[in-house]
Image (cartoon, rainbow, N blue to C red; front, top):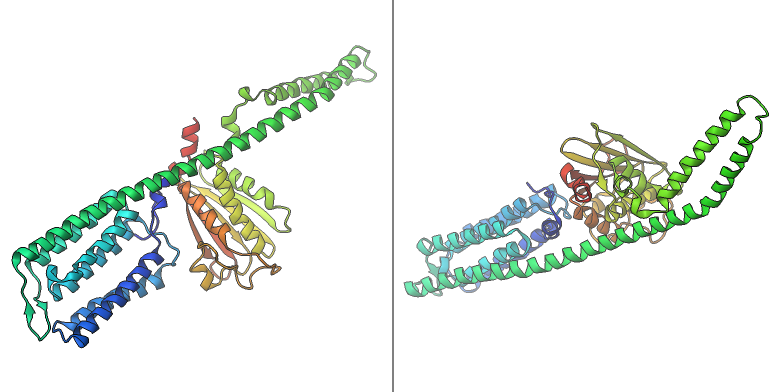
Length: 438
């Protein structure tokens, strides 16, 4: 439930981190505890103190359970975030039931989880949580314990005032939700547009460089190839000195014609079949990403398995950069070898990058993927200064998730050693670029 879903650019960009919700809930626990203690022992108000503290303790226990079960860097799925925010609404409703219901001025805190949902979740889930908050407020309007007051008495407010309080809360929650959702949606659309432009520009520049190099190579090879063809024709005009010489000359002329055909295609970019050259299987994608790192003294092996035909995707510069960064990190911390295993099925595509180093220390693994994170303490082979898991891994995760992938970091199960970086796509997301180009 808490695993990230395979989403598009806009939805993936707004996912909440588990650490964010845990931090906000700790803030709520501290505020609620202080309010209960001050009201009970400072102001002498009479209300079910221990029942209120039990609800606060439930939130603290939930935070501890989430912290021990999941890494703090986990980005929640829409369903997981909705469930956690829904719990916050219900827990607040329980506290308000024990302390006066809608008449309690702290009922305004319903706006906090509703606003967070509107800014980070889909419209459907945000409206569901808005509806839950209004239902809870309506229930509190009809049934709750009296509002405690100084002197041990209960403060009874006019019903019309309480109803107006409920109406103000409902209208404010609806307005704030729609406003926050609209502003966040516009910001996400702008960010997605800028990201798409950056990728298009990078791809265009890359293809332009390839076209220019191909044309230059074709031009430079044309002259020596013409010389070879001329010499072959002159030799063919003389009697063959040995048996089989004529067959060798014919083979040479055929090879020259074939080379001319290839060079003609390279020197004419409009006739180049870009669709075939621009598509890569998972194994080819791993080879391309690993190529710049094969000269660093560590063996890199690329393996692949899966039913044929293998899935194909467009060579996205962002995906290549993300995979290359993970491979570079594995090479830096490996002892002797890095293994890249690509596998695919009818529904998923997976690339696992593993090294034979010491793996991630527990304190780093829990926060892997966060920006400005220091390197694996003591795990680097040469302990160079300045190496680490800073912005590089954070950027790699962001770029891969833009393509619809998920990134999971873990240590190899004993007795094996080393770190594992698993990148996984839904097969439909992996092949999305191919359908676009086709």
